[in-house]
Length: 174
Image (tube, rainbow, N blue to C red; front, top):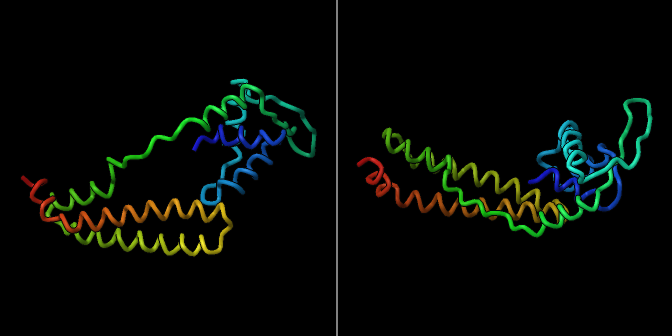
């Protein structure tokens, strides 16, 4: 995820302080990985330097001054271009799990046990996500669906690999 583009998009609804941006980000996108304040302020500093935001006001308070940021026309254009650019699909061609299976075969360990253990972990994650989806709002349901679909694809791969372990063992131990 592009933190900069996400913060710019949040600024399109109006100027905000860094604290407000962090809170909005965490509320909409950061359930599982909230932003650190330092990440917000370093990103805003970069966006300011690049002319994508400007300081809309500075307020004195009991602590440090609070800058209020506003998106510039260049920032709006940048967000529009980012939104219009499709994300590259992740092919997962260098899977750690695949590496573990092949290494298990090469070292004469039980690759089927690795696959079974991973299957159990995937199913555990799926149960947690399904419960979260049941209790969540529409946004949480959609993000859980995304994760669940990926886990389902992984499970299909685990089953296919388990069925082909003997052939894979032959192929990698020649």
